Each structure stands twice: as C-alpha cells, then as structure tokens.
Amino acid sequence: MTDLGTTRTPIGWLDPRVAETVQGFDFTVGARLDDRHGRTGVIRTPHGEIRTPAFIAVGTKATVKALTPEQIDQAGAQAVLANAYHLYLQPGQDIVEEAGGLGAFMNWSGPTFTDSGGFQVMSLGVGFKKVLAMSTQGKQSDDVIAPGRTRMATVDDDGVTFTSHIDGSTHRFTPEKSMRIQHQLGADVMFAFDELTTLMNTRGYQESSVERTRQWAARCLAEHHRLTAQRSGMPYQALFGVVQGAHYQDLRRTAVRGLVALGTTDGGPRGFDGYGIGGALEKENLGTIVGWCSEELPDDKPRHLLGISEPDDVLVAIEAGADTFDCVSPSRVARNGAIYSRDGRYNVTGARFRRDFGPPDPECDCYTCSHYSRAYLHHLFKAKERLFATLATIHNERFIIGLVDDARRSIQDGTFDDFAAQFKGRYYAGPSRT
Ligand SMILES: [Zn+2]
Image (cartoon, rainbow, N blue to C red; front, top):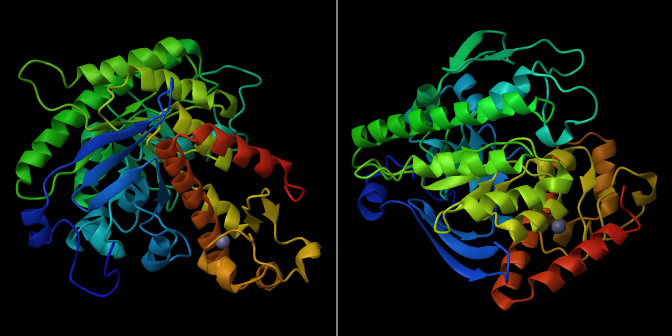
C-alpha cells in the first residue's frame, strides 16, 4: 500500500494502468502446521497481495465505521470486505461502478472483497443479526424467526424475496442478480450467493438447503463467466463458492464436493477461485467444522471463514486451515466501549478508568495506545464524543490484525502452538475481562 490519499486519480479497476499491468488472481501456500491444515500463503489480486493468514477488515457500507482508509492502512489491514446487500440498497451499485469500483469509491487502494448479500438478506430477514449468537436450545423448526420480529425474507428455489430494512420496499435477489451487483461493485474477491440456514432448521431442511446452494453456485459461476467475458480487459474478479451444511459432518463434506465438482468437468468452465466457509457455526465446533471443510477443499485454493467472533476464534480458525476471515466485532464492540488487550477484554467505560493514565494496552503499537490514555477514552465515551469510536476502533482493529500477523509469523517459525497457548492463557486469565 502506497500513496494512500495522495492522489485523486481513481485507483480501482477502471484505471487502464491497472488493467494493463496486473493480471488475474492466484494463491501460493508457504509454511504449514504439522498434522493440521493451518498454513501461511500469499493471495495475489489485481490490487495487491494478501499475506495469509489475514484478517480482512469489515467495511460493510464501503467504510470501516469511524476510520479513514489511511487509519485502516495504519492499523495494518491488508484488505477490506464490503457487503453487496447494503451497497445495493444504498447508494446503489450503479453509483459505485460509476465511481470506478468499490476501492476507488472509498479511496482504498488495496484488495477488496464483497460478500454476496445472502447472509444479510436472510439474517436481517428473519430478525437475527449474528448466526453465532443463535441458540440451538429449544425447538427445531423450518420457520425460525427471532422473537418479536416479522418475517422479511422468503426463500424459493430460484432466489430470495426480501423487504428492505431501510424503507420497507420489496426486492428480489437471485444468484444472477448477486453476481451482476458484485461485478458492478468491482471487488477483487466476490462470493457466490448462498442460502443461510440457522442451527434451528431441521436436518431435512439443511439437506435441501445444501443442494439449493449448490445449484445457486452453478448459476453464479455461469453468470460470472458471462460477465467476465463481457468485461475483457478489466482486472479479473475472483469468485469464491460458499460451503454450507451447518454442524453436520456429512453435509459439510457433500457441500464441498458439490462445489468443487462444478469446475472439474472436462473442457468446462473455470471453477471457483477459492471457497468461503459460511453458515451456522457454534463457537465450540468452529475448529472441527473448518477442519472437515479444509480436508475436502483443494489445497491450492484459499479458504475464507465468513464472519467469526472473538480473538480466540481467530487462532482456532487459523489452526484448522482458514486463510482469511472477516469479523465485525473489533469495531462493533469498540463503539460500545469494549477494548481488547493482551490481558483480556475490558470495558473502558468503568469508573475505575477515570484516573487510569496508562495506554489502553501497554504492549500495543497502535496510534491510540501511543498517544492516549484509558482515562481519556473513558472521558470521551462518557461525554458521547465521536472521537471515542475512532480511537477505540483503531486500537481494536490493530489488536486483532496484530494477533493474526503474530500467528502467521509463528507458523513460519514453527512456534504456533506455543504462541497460541501463551496468548489464550494470558487473554483468559486477565483480571479485567468482562
Ligand atoms: Zn492499541
């Protein structure tokens, strides 16, 4: 990343210099963990390299909330993930395309990802915000809906009809529509449109959903090839298939095999460039489920774990073979006053921080920790000053990016197990954890 913010020339995929000098997308594997699927690698995109494992900063609406692109870069983020559903509703993919694509629109010169919108269409549609927060206790039903909410999304074999959470208008996403939107948004990595199920759906529904997602994946690939051919001369946008199957080992394996087979027909089209692991994952099963998928997935393709939660999940995911992952938590919890530190997560809003003039995390190298105290952050939060969100988000993003950077180095050095044990031991022993 260089010259961020120093030029107004669009640096997205419409820039002919980029089109001429950069081709395609590829992935190479580096060091590996013994007897497990964890590894290091490099993903090459038309907008630069991503050294993996890598944390992809979440910029849902083409912004990492409260941060400028320069601050995202300074926190060490290598790539940003935005969301097709949100950008389709606001401002509209046509405007992003006209601006020169997602990167140019938001002035981020590095690699970009877009999620397909499937998760948001369906999770907002049934009133849930986070799959990981869903409980498996109680009833199993195929008409699951959050308490007190009205169903806003209906799935059929062709696509999903949903109600906008912004103005109540009715919209329809199909695999083809999601591909057209994502091609217009212009990210380096896109995801196939998949059906999100919840852990409360029945086994029978999960089976039919895996098959529906496979059929949608085939339609996404076909539309992706058609759009790519139409846009010859533009840098290639990679497409990742999304593995569903909830917590069922056989369904996860079936899902992977079905997606991989879509690209191996003799003389057929190019298959997926990588794979996303999505859907309902309970925290305690995270490593096991990612491990099943890693066993089945082609070794030479990158694996992205969609939407994880907390710092310890990062280490479990890396060990089980995830190369990249996104997570909204660092910025979301920051805005509520929660600060990550090597000695555990704490709420800087507590009265005991009123006169604590030490940095948020004494071992952190971020801008916030280099210049500001817990007492100042506490004051900003209490005074409802907007600077709080910026300073807290800078720190939490840097914390998780730094954790992943350290994990990557430890795989290269052969010290991952010691590193992970030490991190977790200290993080969960922290007296200040809340
Ligand atoms: Zn910091």
